[in-house]
Length: 146
View 1 (cartoon, rainbow, N blue to C red):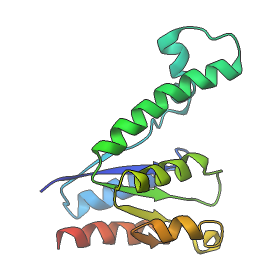
View 2 (tube, rainbow, N blue to C red):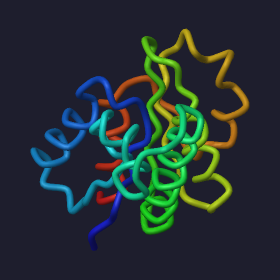
View 3 (cartoon, rainbow, N blue to C red):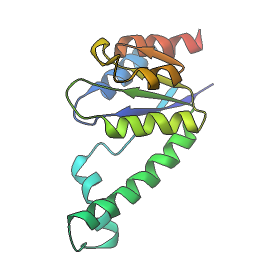
View 4 (cartoon, rainbow, N blue to C red):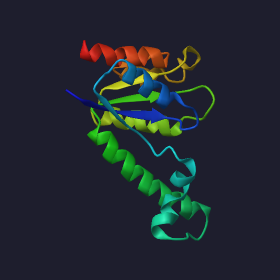
């Protein structure tokens, strides 16, 4: 059995690669998908497809449409979602992806440091599992195949 895991969260650090490497070392049958990790491409995809937009608001709206399309397709195809909330970056897209996973009935592993317990308490109660580290999330994935 292979599963597909959507990795939701900020795109500025290497946490996704860390998960992928640890899963590969365990030889777990998992494929990974996630948001567009090329920040410039994500911001410019609307103009790449539709052409130059009249201002920054229209540019963001166009990019958001294509990013939302991509995210929705990949979330719907995923068997499980891991949503990582880090300490450094604002996490609006992570919260949106985690909430979408819940609405879609996708199993959700929420990764958040202890200091984010309070602001994420409601979301954490909706997740199937809440952990504090990437290592704990990988152990949860491993347990699925035990």
